[in-house]
Structure formats: C-alpha cells, structure tokens
Image (cartoon, rainbow, N blue to C red):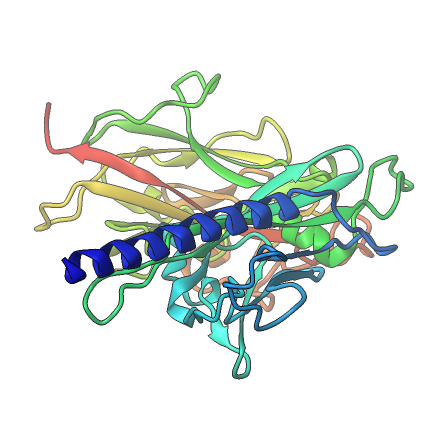
Length: 385
C-alpha cells in the first residue's frame, strides 16, 4: 500500500511540473510574438522569458532576465540561450538546441555551441537554416524557429517536451527612393536579401507555369528557368555560373555531373545526343535552359538533384569571360547576350581571359551584385516508360 501511495505522489508531482512547464512555454512564445523592437538603424532586438509563476515557491528561480535573446546583424541572426532556459534548475545541453527544423538542424551553423558555463550561442546567416523571408513595403523580415529538443536520460526516458520558439529579425528599408526611383537596402543586407531571391524552377514546355513533380524518363526535355526577384531585379542581369547534377541534395557528393561550368559554359551541350541550350532572354533577370534528362551509369538510384550557383550584375554591364551564358553550336561557343566572350569555354575562364573587359560605359565595375545557391529536386527519372 505504501509503494502505491508513493507512486501516486511522484506521478502527481511530475504532472504538476509538466503543467507548469507547459504554461511557461506558452508564455514564452507569446512574449516572442509581441511587437518588434527596432532601433534607429532598422535592426530588431527581441528576447524571450521563460517565466515561472511568481506565487509558486515550489519551482526554483535560479536566474532572472531573459533566457533566450536574439541579436540581428546586417548578415546574421545570433541567438543566445541560457542553459537554465526554463528557470527550473534543469539545464539543457547544446545537443538539445538547434535553429530550424530537422532537415537543417544537423548542419553546424544551425547547432548551438557553448559560450561559457551557463549559456549557448547559435550564429547563422540570415538566409540559412531554413529561414523564411518576408518583404513588405517598408521592412524585410527573416523568420525562423529555435528548437529545444527533449533529450533522453540515461534510462531512455525524458520529463520534458519539445519546444518551438519563434525568432526573427526585422529590418527597415534605409531609403524610400534612389536616383533610379527604386527602394534600396544597406549593401550587406541587400546581398543577403538577394541570396534568398534566387530561384530555379521546372517549367512547362510553353514556359507559362511551373511544372509540378512527375515521373520523367531518359531523354525527356527539361525546361528550367533560373530567376532573380530581389527588390532591385529591374536593374540586374542574371547569370548561371555553374550547375551540377547529383543523386543527393549534397552538391559535393559523388557521382556528380557538371551541366554548366567555367562561369556559364553549357558543358552538357557538347555531349552527343544532347539538346541542351540557353534560350534567348525574355528578361535580364532570368535565364531559360533546356536539357535532356539522364541517369548515372551503373547506379540504380533515379533521384536527380540539380544545384546551381546563380549571380546578378548590373543590367548595364556587358558580358565578359566570367559573366556569360554560352551555348555550344558545333564547333563554336556562342554567347546568348552577344559578344565574343565564350572562346575561353574550351580552356579556363577567368578575369585574365581575353575579353574580360569593361562594359559599354567603361566605368561601371564588374562586381557581382549578389549571388545565391539553388537546388531543384528530386527529379524522378526512369529508364523507360
């Protein structure tokens, strides 16, 4: 009878702690949903408390002040988490903290590291770890989620629950208009915003809409559209620096096949029976590409991922040896945007290559305004119908 009574007491105490914990988490999430604190420079600073009931002396109050805080720089989101995040004396470990959902949480920039004896830090680029970008008329917002997992104890049990804490960085646009009558952002912020504005889509044969995933077969013609939709897209010219096909989302995995390489040379077009080519531009901020589907020889896997490095320059800048889109029409390389800049495709293209020259004005620098990495896939390709 005594054993039964003790079990009931332990169960009741655990239940009370769980209920108190749940209300604490709910309060923390509500705290983060309060209005942003934006300073004069347009950066947002937010912090969350995981409060305990002020009238409940049974729960320990080992520290005061915020247990989760967020600092936003021009290029990154920095999250500081107290080890006693729940203010109940039960310390979390670095392994329990991550930024973004599970598909991102295994990447090192998305994991927490110790920053002293009592707190952890996560520092990730604004567009990293699965963050969501929202652009309004007067602000730019990067949103993500801090995940506090429930690590198992030595006997494989846990008395905690998984917690998701919203975190975000808000930025105000620095100027309402420029000499080009277009809203502008701080240069470093614009670069990060632009990185999230690149896309690579599978399109229908008439290029009118995005094509939903479906079964593909060897030899089918893919219609791919790379584009840039940043706030400055009207003044930018897009280039595909490289594209590689792999059997996993990891662009460095083996086997891999380079479709585009050497700063815009469509290498796949040199293969026999290939119909790969860049199409004439419809707009400066996009490029359309068609190529035939394929499979890797002696590999039974049929999930193809295509990862491309995209970049934009000033629309006024002429093509050169590192900013170009070159088709191969046997036996010559021909640039989509005209200009004899593709002869280096048979060797190594660099800034020292012939025709790496200035643009039409001769004064506009050849700087890359923004760049980003995009991945399309998986594309399911089968040997035959």
